[in-house]
Image 1 (cartoon, rainbow, N blue to C red):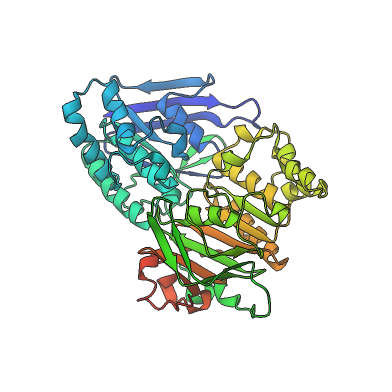
Image 2: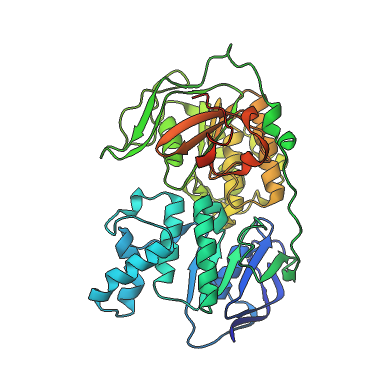
Length: 471
């Protein structure tokens, strides 16, 4: 049975170059799973808004939806959907609006949270959750109403490996029950076991394609193996003999026996959702206020807000939080002006990253991936001594992943120390060390100690699978 159909839809934003959709058509039937791939800024998230029926501007063509038909959607940034203060209240919101008796809500909410793999108390403040955990929360908030169609915007980028595995199993079960699913993803191999239809959004149309085998990355291809350098003569920009990261309420995130980050070094910080990656980055920048005192020096001093100027830059996991100017070029020049640096660096960085066509657009009208690129570009042109990147590849297609990798390598060669977080190893990126958070412990591993496909495994198995702990 066809639940929803788009017939020859054409649409474009006024600021966009050309139309996003050019007589685009799509049918969603019960039990189908559609994977939609496309370049950064191609309109994938806008397509989900069209499917759910909340597109703010008029379009030509038809959107035909079977009545009644309920649709659940989880956007790329789950924070834009949050309405309540606690986990249980957020999931129960839809039930309240549907008139479900209160004595039945708790069991329904708990079941939806278990389906999404989020095992926390119902009174847990949402503010305590990581971005990945909030993505799971929004999945639960949609599933509690048993929608006929579920739309997911880049779940692979937001979830850790365990979350991806759990979601894959869940999607199988939802398909079996007849739910139609649409997944927007840059990673073509994600959720391949569930996918029944594959589409490339290109030139404003959905083009059907067959999956091709992904190249196997062998140990000799891992760029990190070629980066071993003698850094012992350099003064570290981050140094700690022992570190315990915990919140003021004594909730422990992790222990570490010691950390060192040197000029020109690239370190990948990997771990599960909620393990403390973002908290560590913000602690290093001196902007995480709800944690205990840290035995830690960054650029020779204890971390404190406003202490580092242009010497330290932090890319937030939500790029919209650090974009506030009217145009992209003004965004690029803002910090340069504040620190008395040449404003020509702004347009130069946009040109280098292939973003010059965005210069006069508002950063608030860009896609999530484009916002990530602009925010990163505005920091890179400061040429900081320490660059902290929170999930810098989220929302990027393979082309822009390569662009960001090239930029990281260039900054590293210029002596910038770089610490970047991710849920998993990024095989395209040349790194010196991996900092892995698992089981409330942060350990450091040399890149050259990786062996075979271990580089692509979950960090929980690092020690037993041949990683060399240098922590």
